[in-house]
Image 1 (cartoon, rainbow, N blue to C red):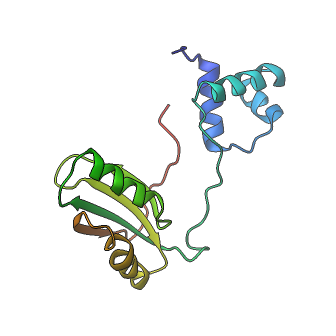
Image 2 (image 1 turned 135 degrees about the horizontal axis):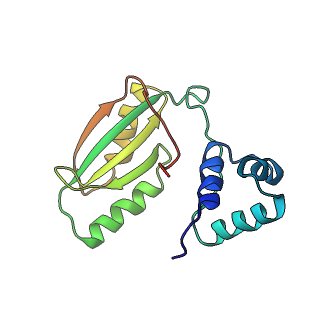
Amino acid sequence: METLDITDLQILRTLQKNARLTTKELADTVHLTPTPVFERQKRLERQGYIQKYVAVLNPEKLDLGLLVFCHVKLKQINREMAEAFTRRIQRIPEVTECYNTSGTYDYLLKVRTADMKHYQEFVLTKLGEIDNVGSVESTFVMSEVKQNMGLPI
Protein backbone atom coordinates (compact mmCIF):
# COMPACT_ATOMS: atom_id res chain seq x y z
CA MET A 1 0.00 0.00 0.00
CA GLU A 2 1.37 3.36 -1.03
CA THR A 3 1.58 6.10 1.59
CA LEU A 4 -0.60 9.14 0.98
CA ASP A 5 1.03 12.55 1.30
CA ILE A 6 -0.57 15.78 2.55
CA THR A 7 -1.68 16.76 -0.96
CA ASP A 8 -3.37 13.39 -1.55
CA LEU A 9 -5.24 13.79 1.74
CA GLN A 10 -6.25 17.35 0.82
CA ILE A 11 -7.60 16.10 -2.50
CA LEU A 12 -9.60 13.36 -0.76
CA ARG A 13 -11.00 15.77 1.89
CA THR A 14 -11.98 18.29 -0.77
CA LEU A 15 -13.67 15.70 -2.99
CA GLN A 16 -15.60 14.33 0.00
CA LYS A 17 -17.13 17.79 0.43
CA ASN A 18 -17.76 18.42 -3.26
CA ALA A 19 -17.01 15.81 -5.92
CA ARG A 20 -18.34 18.08 -8.65
CA LEU A 21 -15.31 20.37 -8.60
CA THR A 22 -13.50 20.71 -11.90
CA THR A 23 -9.86 19.69 -11.99
CA LYS A 24 -8.92 23.38 -12.11
CA GLU A 25 -11.06 24.18 -9.04
CA LEU A 26 -9.60 21.21 -7.19
CA ALA A 27 -6.07 22.27 -8.19
CA ASP A 28 -6.70 25.81 -6.88
CA THR A 29 -7.88 24.37 -3.57
CA VAL A 30 -4.74 22.26 -3.06
CA HIS A 31 -2.41 24.89 -4.58
CA LEU A 32 -1.17 22.87 -7.56
CA THR A 33 -1.64 23.06 -11.31
CA PRO A 34 -4.40 21.00 -12.93
CA THR A 35 -2.18 18.34 -14.57
CA PRO A 36 -0.59 16.90 -11.39
CA VAL A 37 -3.95 17.09 -9.57
CA PHE A 38 -5.64 15.20 -12.42
CA GLU A 39 -2.90 12.55 -12.31
CA ARG A 40 -3.15 12.25 -8.51
CA GLN A 41 -6.94 11.94 -8.65
CA LYS A 42 -6.73 9.19 -11.30
CA ARG A 43 -4.09 7.37 -9.20
CA LEU A 44 -6.33 7.60 -6.11
CA GLU A 45 -9.17 6.12 -8.17
CA ARG A 46 -6.99 3.30 -9.56
CA GLN A 47 -5.67 2.45 -6.10
CA GLY A 48 -9.21 2.26 -4.71
CA TYR A 49 -9.07 5.25 -2.34
CA ILE A 50 -11.89 6.80 -4.37
CA GLN A 51 -14.51 4.13 -4.97
CA LYS A 52 -17.16 6.14 -6.82
CA TYR A 53 -18.82 9.52 -7.16
CA VAL A 54 -22.47 9.89 -6.15
CA ALA A 55 -25.20 12.47 -5.69
CA VAL A 56 -26.73 12.61 -2.21
CA LEU A 57 -30.50 12.83 -2.66
CA ASN A 58 -33.09 14.40 -0.38
CA PRO A 59 -35.30 11.56 0.95
CA GLU A 60 -38.11 13.95 1.96
CA LYS A 61 -38.42 15.26 -1.61
CA LEU A 62 -38.64 11.67 -2.86
CA ASP A 63 -41.33 10.66 -0.35
CA LEU A 64 -38.93 8.43 1.61
CA GLY A 65 -39.03 10.37 4.86
CA LEU A 66 -39.23 7.45 7.30
CA LEU A 67 -35.79 6.22 8.34
CA VAL A 68 -35.64 2.99 10.33
CA PHE A 69 -32.75 0.99 11.73
CA CYS A 70 -33.85 -2.60 11.70
CA HIS A 71 -32.02 -5.25 13.74
CA VAL A 72 -32.40 -8.76 12.34
CA LYS A 73 -31.63 -12.00 14.13
CA LEU A 74 -31.57 -15.16 12.05
CA LYS A 75 -33.03 -18.43 13.39
CA GLN A 76 -29.81 -20.22 12.52
CA ILE A 77 -26.59 -18.96 11.04
CA ASN A 78 -23.86 -20.56 9.00
CA ARG A 79 -22.03 -19.42 5.88
CA GLU A 80 -24.71 -20.66 3.47
CA MET A 81 -27.57 -19.08 5.43
CA ALA A 82 -25.70 -15.78 5.82
CA GLU A 83 -24.94 -15.66 2.10
CA ALA A 84 -28.57 -16.46 1.23
CA PHE A 85 -29.78 -13.69 3.55
CA THR A 86 -27.39 -11.10 2.13
CA ARG A 87 -28.32 -12.04 -1.46
CA ARG A 88 -31.99 -11.43 -0.64
CA ILE A 89 -31.24 -8.13 1.14
CA GLN A 90 -29.24 -6.91 -1.87
CA ARG A 91 -32.42 -7.11 -3.97
CA ILE A 92 -34.64 -5.11 -1.60
CA PRO A 93 -34.58 -1.43 -2.62
CA GLU A 94 -35.86 -0.12 0.73
CA VAL A 95 -32.70 -1.44 2.41
CA THR A 96 -30.10 1.25 1.70
CA GLU A 97 -27.39 -0.23 3.94
CA CYS A 98 -26.80 -3.60 5.58
CA TYR A 99 -24.18 -4.55 8.15
CA ASN A 100 -23.30 -7.94 9.62
CA THR A 101 -22.89 -7.22 13.33
CA SER A 102 -21.82 -8.90 16.53
CA GLY A 103 -23.97 -9.02 19.64
CA THR A 104 -27.62 -9.83 20.06
CA TYR A 105 -28.52 -9.35 16.40
CA ASP A 106 -26.86 -10.68 13.26
CA TYR A 107 -27.60 -7.78 10.91
CA LEU A 108 -28.36 -4.07 11.06
CA LEU A 109 -30.41 -2.71 8.16
CA LYS A 110 -30.92 0.94 7.29
CA VAL A 111 -34.34 1.16 5.71
CA ARG A 112 -36.08 4.06 3.92
CA THR A 113 -39.82 4.11 3.27
CA ALA A 114 -42.52 6.73 2.84
CA ASP A 115 -44.25 6.17 6.16
CA MET A 116 -45.16 3.67 8.88
CA LYS A 117 -47.72 1.90 6.69
CA HIS A 118 -45.10 1.27 4.00
CA TYR A 119 -42.59 0.11 6.62
CA GLN A 120 -45.14 -2.38 7.99
CA GLU A 121 -45.67 -3.67 4.46
CA PHE A 122 -41.88 -3.96 4.04
CA VAL A 123 -41.56 -6.02 7.25
CA LEU A 124 -44.49 -8.30 6.42
CA THR A 125 -43.85 -8.91 2.74
CA LYS A 126 -40.12 -8.45 2.20
CA LEU A 127 -38.47 -9.48 5.49
CA GLY A 128 -41.33 -11.86 6.24
CA GLU A 129 -40.62 -13.79 3.04
CA ILE A 130 -37.09 -14.65 4.17
CA ASP A 131 -37.39 -18.06 5.82
CA ASN A 132 -34.45 -17.81 8.19
CA VAL A 133 -35.43 -14.49 9.84
CA GLY A 134 -36.02 -15.21 13.52
CA SER A 135 -36.74 -11.75 14.92
CA VAL A 136 -36.78 -8.10 13.92
CA GLU A 137 -36.42 -5.06 16.16
CA SER A 138 -37.06 -1.64 14.66
CA THR A 139 -35.72 1.72 15.81
CA PHE A 140 -37.49 4.69 14.24
CA VAL A 141 -35.46 7.84 13.66
CA MET A 142 -37.23 10.96 14.93
CA SER A 143 -34.64 13.40 13.53
CA GLU A 144 -31.25 13.19 11.88
CA VAL A 145 -28.81 15.08 14.07
CA LYS A 146 -25.66 14.46 12.04
CA GLN A 147 -25.23 12.88 8.68
CA ASN A 148 -21.75 12.92 7.21
CA MET A 149 -20.95 10.92 4.12
CA GLY A 150 -17.23 11.54 4.50
CA LEU A 151 -14.50 9.78 6.46
CA PRO A 152 -12.51 11.54 9.21
CA ILE A 153 -9.21 11.89 7.33
